[in-house]
Amino acid sequence: MSAVLMDGKVLGKKIRESVKTRSASLREKGIIPCLAVVLAGEDPASMSYVNSKEKALTEAGMDSRDIRLPYGIEEADLLSIIADLNKDDKIHGILVQLPLPDHINEEKITSAIDPGKDVDCFHPVSVGNMVLGRQAFLPCTPHGILVLLGEYNVPVCGSHVVVAGRSNIVGKPLMNLLIRKEYNATVTLCHTGTKDLARFLQQADIIIAAAGKPGLITPAMVREGAAVIDVGINRVQDSASKKGYILCGDVDPAVAEKAAFFSPVPGGVGPMTIAMLLQNVAESAEKRL
Ligand code: NAD
Image 1 (cartoon, rainbow, N blue to C red):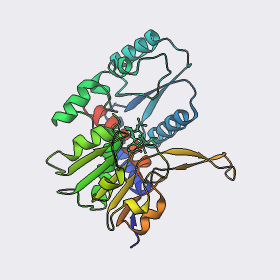
Image 2: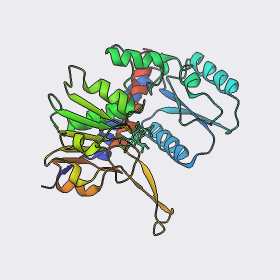
Image 3: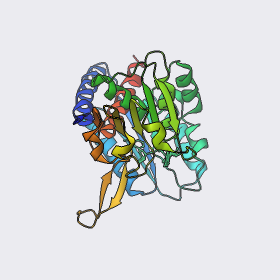
C-alpha cells in the first residue's frame, strides 16, 4: 500500500484564500483584522514561526502588530504590554510566541490575555470553554489536524485515535476535541509514562505523533491501512544541508508504504496551524461588526 499524502500546504492555501475574502469584506466595513504578535528573545525557531505567521497575515490582507522584545524583558513590563493590547480596539487577536524566556512565568502571561482575543486558546477560560464545548477560539494545531482529516475523508467517527504527546497545545486539546460528539472518536493519549508505545500504536486507526522525537514512530508500529499524522517539528543536524540542519517529524516517512493516509513533515500540519490562526483572527474581527 502507498499512502495518500495529506497536503496541508494546498489545503492551508485554500483556507487562507477564503480568509482573504473575509478580510476584504471586513476592510470594506472599516475593520482591518489585526493580530498582535509578541516575541521575547531571539530563539531562531520562534523567530522563523513568527515571521511565517506575519507573512501569512499580510498575504491574507490582515495587519500584524509586531512586538519584538529583548530576552531580558521584565515580566511586569510584558504584562503591561498585554494589558494595553487587551484594551486596544484595533487589535483582534494576541499571540504570545512560546517558549518565553526562563525568568518569565508562562502561566501568568497566557492568563493575562483577554479570552476574547485569545486566538491561540491558551487562557484557562478559553481552554475550559473549549473542553466544555462552549464558545472559544479552537486551538490552531489540533483544529488544523481535524480539518485535514475531514478534507481527506479519513473516518474519525468511531475510530480509535492514538495520540503521542500530552502537551497543552497539541495532545490535550486534541483529545478533548476528538471526543466531542461531532467527531466521536475513542482516544488513547500516550506520553513519556506510557509503557510499550508500540502496543497502543498498533491498535490505532489514526495515529497522531506530537512528541518532538525524530524517528519515534517506525513502520513496524503502524497497522496496515492506518492514517498517520505527523505533528513533530525537529531540527536534526545535517552537514550536507545549507542551514546545517534539516526539519523532520516524529514519524519515519517509510510508514507511507503501510499507511492509507500520511501527513508528512514538512507540508502537513504546519501550514494548517497558520491557516487556522488566520481563521480565528478573522472570526474575532467579525465579532466587532
Ligand atoms: P512538548 O514538546 O511540550 O511535549 C512533548 C510531549 O510528548 C510530552 O507530553 C511527552 O510526554 C510526550 N513524549 C515525549 N517522548 C515520548 C515518547 N517516547 N512516547 C510518548 N510520548 C512522548 O509538545 P508540543 O509542544 O506539543 O510539541 C510536540 C512536537 O510538535 C514538537 O516537535 C513541536 O515542534 C511540534 N509542534 C508542531 C506544530 C505544528 O504546527 N506543526 C505545533 C505545535 C508543536
